[in-house]
Image (cartoon, rainbow, N blue to C red; front, side, top):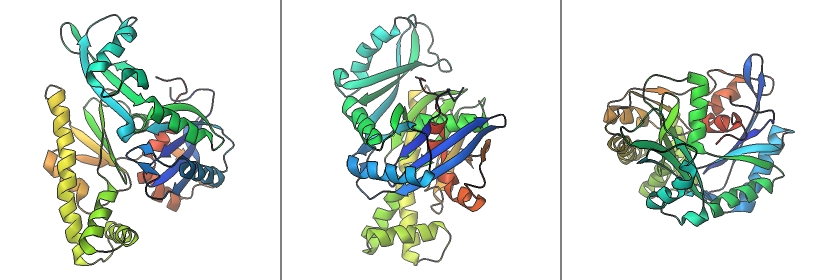
Length: 350
């Protein structure tokens, strides 16, 4: 189940834009009725932390005006340094008493004061430890960051019914469209300021981390190497990603940046394997606004030896073609996975 009777909006607060989605559930499945995307100025959101609440609230209000939605309840997602997701192994115990022990266990793994965090957990069944231990996924966020998200969203007139993790929303969207696969699968949402890296196994999230690389990494390197403004560097990167003619130096910078970005992502694949007893990822799916950077995804596949596929967040999601024409749908497709996953959220899920 992805929905409750209370209809909600998905709200993805990213580094470079605010995205809003409204889904309708009917006999034929899910239909995207409304979608809005509003660019935000650099620095309003940094590393997943909302730096300028007023600026982000203004962007949310603009997205609401664009979408012309009447819904007031919303699910949004935290990411980056604002949230920590960690798999731990702990002594096996009855699920009724684990909540009492999890706070003590978290003190050993979470670098925050446990009295100042919101803490959730999920017992992993697909990756059970042997013998007397069990695997648990911890999710922790500083309360001050949670309150900042709540205040920022609700200042726009919305009611924040659910705060999710962006990586979990990505997995939610994947599962709805592709079902529960029998292989260990990685999902990479390569955005502007961060890459959400999630691993799923038989319908369970067994690994989630946010890697601080994305489209802005390329923009910054072009800016520094060529001495152009950030706006000019961004335009050159986009032109190269669209296959348009650009100065050869742009291609050289992108190729060089690819090497460092691929190293970071490969490290995440290797870290997953090292922390899960050598578990092997069979395939990865990519989405996000930066997947069309020339050579990037192919280089990740070559470096890891793992085949990839571009994720289609609309594989089993229909669209209201009067409100969302095909050309617009094609533009938003690589940007929509997380916000659709949030819009699919069932209020009250843990």
